[in-house]
Image (tube, rainbow, N blue to C red; front, side, top):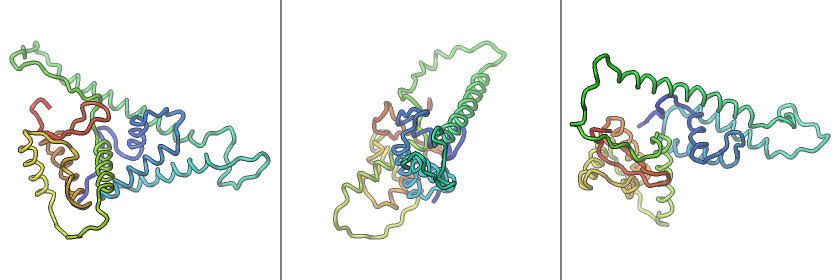
Amino acid sequence: MSYQVKLEVFEGPLDLLLHLINRLEIDIYDIPMAELTAQYIEHLQTMRVLQLDELSEYLVLAATLLEIKSKMLLPVHEGEVFDDELDYDMEDDPRDELVARLIEYRKYKEAATSLKESAAERSVHFTKSPADLSEFGEVVPSQSEEPLNVFDLIGAFQKMLDRKRLKAPLTAHISKVEISVGEKMDEILATLERGGGKCDFFSLFEEGDTPELVVTFLSLLELMKRREIIVEQHHNFDDLTVSFRREED
């Protein structure tokens, strides 16, 4: 079981870092390394639980974050000579190189998004006169403040694992029950049908051990990939809602 982490334009560790900076409302020019590093490693641990492929680049960036964090924690004494590998100019901020990479990456990411939007806008133009579409009804815009991506879902999965750990009994009986992604997909669709077409994201993870929870999460991603369901968050910090994909979606 594996599921490759991809965003709409690019993929990789810098995407995750920018995602965390936006979510935590951090000033990119004054990054609190302790908080950002902790959040990054937390996401990375969850991604490893899910057995996601291509984690090597994410681990390299994690090592870079820890190195920057350690440099910022080093005491500096006047007149002290540092080892060549640890020495850096007092006037230089250890975060400068990372900030420059993030700004450059964000610039190209925004440019790519702008080009994609321009292409989408241009694709709706035709030489004939616009047709009257009023008979199809009014299009209701989505209420979500910004679209969800894979990292949002991984964050929600991480919260669910934390809840399960807090509720776990001190003693437990371990039994091996194998279930496939296809079977779990059928269960999710049946749950949605019983709930009138929608249900709470966390309600799908109320039962089962860690392997079964991972199968449930991968099944959700596969159903989204097949465009059978949609996961929405209507406002920031609201719980996620899973529902059948509507035609307008």
